[in-house]
Image (cartoon, one colour):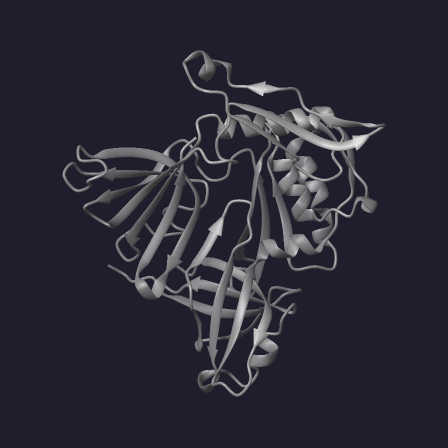
Length: 359
């Protein structure tokens, strides 16, 4: 079984070109990714083994730190060092925020009528292509059209706009992938990937078995506030003495089957006054919350598990197969297929943990 080891590369944030290899840097927590979210990784650089140009290679806001699987040469994670702390100690401490964090430092404006939802996402993200990191946008249409308008004076970041858009019914999913920009692997590129559904969400790509590569798992079921509801109303901003509101969206089938009424009212974002948009938010929230949430966290030996970035990735459907007699929670065994909405990788501990959310 080949262990999972990562090499850290320091790249120029504007061009993506590799500036230094950093063998003396190590993550002091797991690497992780989530669909449509920022993740952070704490890092430590041992100055005794650092290259002479380590300061320039890890300069906050100027560099991108990339973790590459040494066996497969696949970039697994990249992040921008923002705080950097060092002094009389023999090491410098960083917190690097994943490339998605840059989306919260650029502002968007867009107007379109009858435009595919993926194209709207690509449109609000267009500022990333000017005077920024080496972003490219890779969008696939959903076939679902919408009207959307946001002005520059609304002061909404690209991240806020994408979050607002992906909270609507029929919305695509998005993430930022770090890939090689050239065959010689001298520079990286950041791909804002916009898809009706990321990965391969319906056909299981790999099986995770216990006993086998899986060492443990847990199932978290929740109907807490914000995670479960049988009736949803989305509220917008006040206008003309009133407040914009969605229709009432109710899971009538569940109520008829004997469920109680659990209400959820919320504001999906500042500045929303369009009732059609509020309806799309409420419909999406009800679809996600009607039966509560079921999340499976699987922990496996990284050296024995399917290889991240080669065998599976974000959005893929994975199958967990637990043999009878190996789990007190499921004494008869259980087989479940669900999508990988996130993962954590701790190479030093030989541990990989996909996070699977059931629809």
